[in-house]
Length: 574
Image (cartoon, rainbow, N blue to C red; front, side):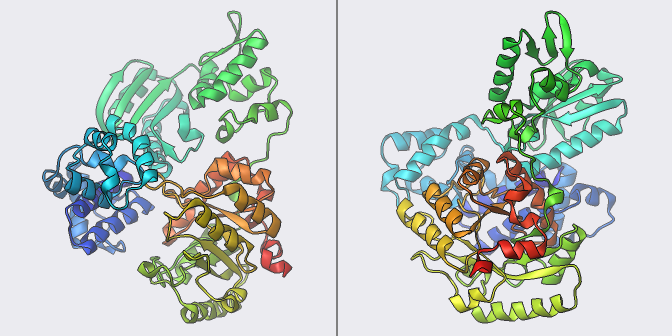
């Protein structure tokens, strides 16, 4: 099993334990284990099979959890999960797919209203029974109604990083079988959406039937839905559906274009083709019965009078007009990023020291990083007060004094308090190199109150950036309500930056808002919100967000050398 599959089982155990009022420390242990496994850089199943590494050497994995991981890898299931699930109605866990309905709320619905399924929840909503429960206001009702369909059909979209792990493994298996000439994972995965429903793989092969045989024999396949000589569909053990299509080399570009989508983008392309007396489909671009193009995407776009459009932009948001006018943005790339501007150490809720994080960052070729441990309001993370923060900065100064070509910025992730004030005094913030201000509490305040908090922070002279601005957790928590245009106007006027947080569970700002911010003159920073050294490669997800928003390196301050980065901060102008 892949790491996301193992992690998902631990997350489900944590959910089941929480619904059943288990010890909070036990619940947290499974949650932490799930995150550790999901973020672990090597396939844990391979380590178990090889027997070359003691799993208890992995931080946060003790003997009991190591034994359970081994059970999952060898049997595909976790007995504890089955045992816990048997104590609850089968449909109860489906409710957790509804954004905003975490284990605590599901438990309350079950105990107070006897809600056991999505159908029960729909009935309770229709009868107005939900309104009687504390913490379930009109906004929550609206979210639940919107998410009911997802729970009822059993649909589950996978986070991009989880899908990437699965896609990489499937592609590696196919390539190891030989005979594959070209291969690409298409669909929303190739467009780098933050969640993925399924995977579409397009190949050319010397022997298509052999490729199909290899595909359905892949070790993670739980069910073969269909199989032919040029197409097969399977469902993996984690529930992900994967389609494989083999096409002739002369149609590879056309198939890749078609299956990458989006649907709206493809419709616009077909209209352009029709206007020029062509027919465009998954087999090629045809003039009558003659295929005029199809081998590559580039030649199809060129025949239609367009520049090739990067997959991340193919959402029918104006990219085709830009391609016609040769005005497509030169999208930012991972190699453009010079430093990571949000990460946490073991001083608060991270799992690495300053030295550990710096070493990992240097290995990625970065020139600078910001250590942004939490301020004191985040008590669960042992947030830093002014005294502890200054002590950390002294240690950073000492390290910088002996380091060449790499700088650690004296920084903090500063909480914007419920009353709009900041969590640390101005004299401390003035001594920082970089301050990112965020909201963690009071998420249910009114739109007016949340806007006031964010705008006030953006106006503050010592706040350099607003971190994970919408507060969303992908698939778990919807963005809080605030006036994004008002925040953009303030950021554009003051020089405050907006963060694109690439942690796969956040992906915040969403790409549509980042694109809107650019139109208003906002500049951005990219970060990973790393909580251990192995998280630093998450920067690619921040870059994917930026690319989907049409951002170029010049729109992003931490693509600049350190001296230029410092000059670009609001504090440099004071």
